[in-house]
Amino acid sequence: METQARDRPRLTPKGERTRTRIVQAAARLIHQRGVASTTLDDIRSAAGVSGSQLSHYFAGKDELVQAVIDYQARTITGNQQQADLGSPEGLRAWRDTVIAQVNTSQGEGGCPLGSLAGQLAETDPQARALIASGFEQWSAAISDGLRRLHDAGHLPDGTDPDDLAVTLLAALQGGLLIAQVQRDTRPLQTAIDTLLDLARINHQDAPADGETPGSRR
Image (cartoon, rainbow, N blue to C red; front, side, top):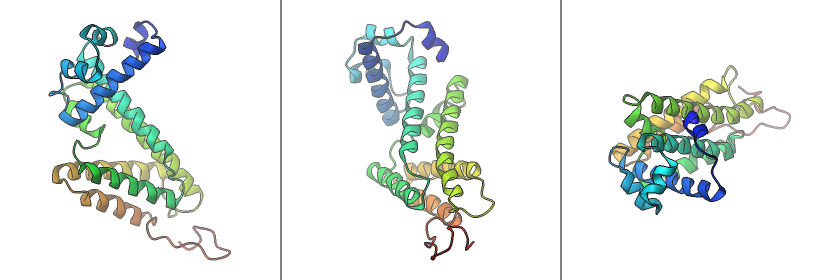
């Protein structure tokens, strides 16, 4: 995708806005309907562009799907970076936000990135690589917050923030998938809460005077 982008002329600000509108429309439709059931005509109509405009920005559907993967990965990673996972209160607030968002949709569509993996990983090697990179970015954003949490003494001794981030992301993906199928957020809530309990986040008492956050482990 980076090579294709370099081969294209640099876009004007108006062109960037049009391209972004196309990608956002494609991302929305693909999340709702899936890749196979979303046509270029659907995307063109939703974005309010002509066929020639669409072909000007994207050589075909594969290139547009790659742009959607990049868009979903950047959006999720950006949102994750905005969450304060560096404190127990911030981590619990993130947990509440995730569950509230899924509850609003009743899990419909699943994870915007994970659902793409399920559709493309076995048939499109380039898409699979892009999705894998997206998950790595997401995991790294979680790790950054958990590392601050660890440095502040809020995680059990011996906890590796990177390993915990991968575990949390895996629990999140599994919970989102089951919530999508059952139209129920309880599996997601159980998966996240169990992991936070094991990491001593949900029920960690405030330290007494003179104690450091991790001195009572």
